Length: 133
Image 1: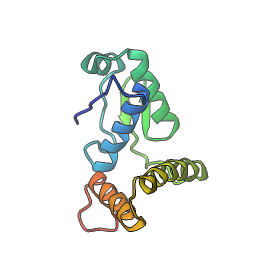
Image 2 (image 1 turned 30 degrees about the horizontal axis):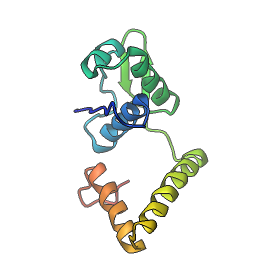
Image 3 (image 1 turned 135 degrees about the vertical axis):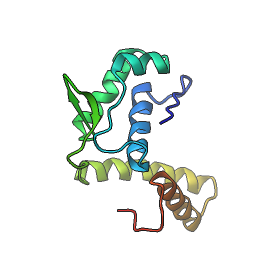
Image 4 (image 1 turned 90 degrees about the vertical axis):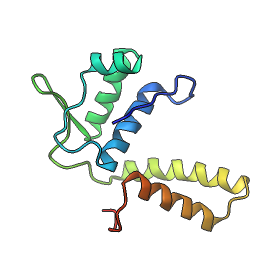
């Protein structure tokens, strides 16, 4: 899996890393039980501080995407992914609301906005004609 960190972005580095790991899981590039590089190794590969990698890993562990074991290291959670929670729906709603507002200001209509959201969802999960679940 290719991870690209934008050092100039206003988005915190650990958030960029966590988001890309979630995208890797959603797309199937990272499968349940797959090991991830050590904190030190991934930090060196990406040119970022090991504490940044550790924060991303810990965040994803707390959210239920990763398991961290002393002997096995960091692995993609194999016991199922986290369920849809009220907190997730609130966070998603805030993010979509912000994007919808900007799209409207830029002149995008609802149909085009929904179409772009659908395209992005399908390309993210490597949609192959199923229902996406």
